Length: 346
Image (cartoon, rainbow, N blue to C red; front, side, top):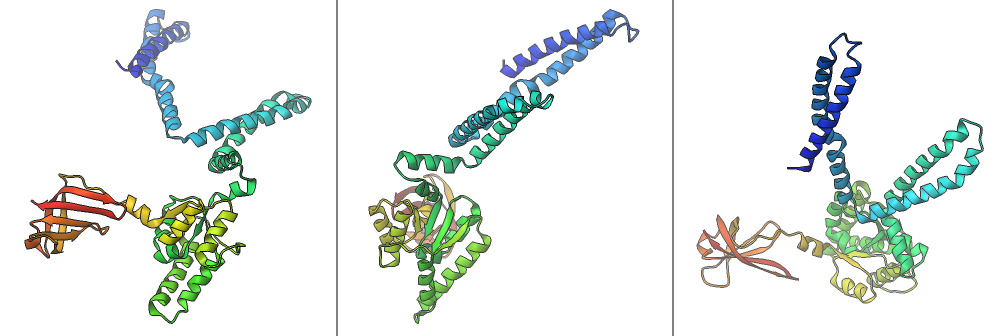
């Protein structure tokens, strides 16, 4: 027996009793026998209780529980802090407002408390991440400026040229402001003006990505003129600038920059690592359709590639070269270099 069914029975009983009582009192005004009128209203009350009870008991409780479970801990804590802040603020104004002439002095303190509590919750909930970041920075011994800067990401030249940052920015998964230093843009301009065709193409592609970022990104984009006191090359200047702004993360695809930033305690967001972690994993026993494009190293092996570029080595797949066939995954290897699957023909 479910809890909702129990509440339905209780509600049906309570509403039936109320209906019978109301029917008995209205019998004379409706010119009906008291017993018949009570029975009629009893049935109406029982039906009302049976239908309406879940909507005023279990279902609101379930909705509230679901909302609490789905709400992040940061949001819950900051909402409670905002409620406390609003009530304290309302308490400071309660006594002066109560001195006003009635009915203003009678009702205004209560209205002020409700409004202050509401806006306190909304204000703190909307800035939950910033508040937690500020608190974390203060606990670690940081200052106010550093904590406010933690909602930013520095973009490296390589990640701009790569172009995938544009697709990531459109999804809204990253909420921090993207900072693009002027010395990074100058490096792109130097590449675009290079005599080497490859460098020139990469530089122009990077500048195109920058323009599209400012037009299409859901994230805030800002070009900054900050020049760090230390650092000669672009990589060193990025690390120094990240350190000066309170250890702002750097987004890059450059492995040397990745290692340098890690040495200085700077967080690195690597697009390649993100792409690798999002590649689909096929479990042994699953069947996939694969286009065999070449021979493998071993006899009778065929090699195909998934859409994301993952290699699949197929036993006895050599004879199916240039054909698309169903294969069964037998095992896979996962390493820092990526994934590789082994399969067999069906």
